[in-house]
Length: 95
View 1: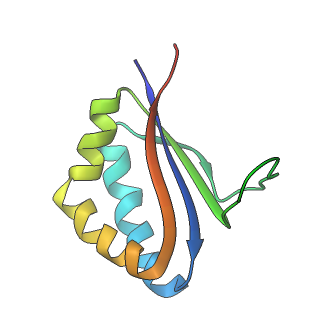
View 2: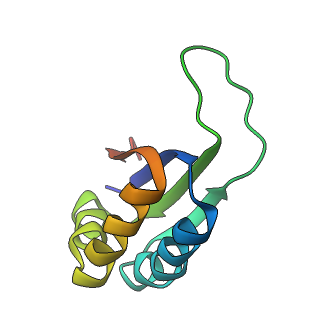
């Protein structure tokens, strides 16, 4: 089954977060991920929102986890964590 990688982010250091984005923009597609939403308009209907929201579709949960565990991505995660407050999750789809 396919999976969605969902990241909800409040960026606190745009320059450093930009370094993370450069790496993520390469690693995620290398593992079969396709960005389907990336920082566009959000209408928060319930709960607490974040300033930036990203959704990538993967062929499977395992492919999304492989992207996350990629050593290049893990190095970039250290920059993302220093430059933002974020929630990242992978959700299996129902297809």
